[in-house]
Length: 366
Image (cartoon, rainbow, N blue to C red; front, side):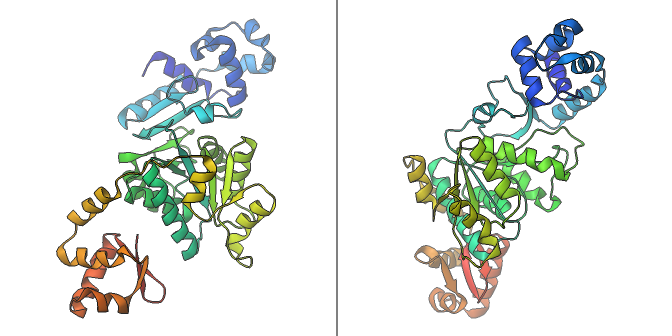
């Protein structure tokens, strides 16, 4: 961490100086340190600054807090990414209200060639979760980075599926990197660091307060080429993210659902208002975005999966090659193993998150 980092962090902590004003100052002075070293008369002359803001800059002296943050970031290998850094997400950089400072932990490329965010209700139906898994699995075959908000429901389903298919996935947080909210997603967040990461514009010791989530949503929308909504009520964070994406002139797409299902109301509302394109799968996304397929070798991933399974587990998993779902009676009939062994093998596969139990005694691969 350099001395300039101290001034960059301090710039985000000055009362009366938000992201937009901070960027105006940076445009004039070039560096954060130059802002603090400028004379008050020079600051006052800058359009939009005035006496109150100029005095706030000159009176700021809480560098102890910035030093605490630098110590925290160094200890936990967190990367501060300032607005003028080449590492800053270029898509987000073009948004007028983009945050001046981001905090990142992980290994993902924040400027990957293709980035999609997937958002939706925190209480998805099995239909919504299945669509999400299928969507992320196929997008993951085409070098696409998946972004979401690590919330319950569709968000975490997107992250988990991306992990399973080895696609980069980034969680955008509404709090500091000293915690995970909700706490039950701590293990998933930890797994995301290997081939993805966690990103926020909040310093440590920031709680996941309600007012922080719209700020989180603007990063989700601004970093992405397209926002995909999978199940949403008439109100909620997913529609906020979609509206922000529209304000940034980004593409928005939505999965249709039943007209009498509350959790499809938001998606249908977006389509009806011509705010979102109706899609039914990843193929529609690829076509509408004009992305040519760069297919990964799925056979390699399947081979790696089978290496970690015993013979009985491999035999059972192979039954799903031609059908997405199987009834328990079909599994008993096709796998030619004793009934007790089938039950035990299914349980082991569920524990390993290889298969998932569905209503009606059906199973599917995760």
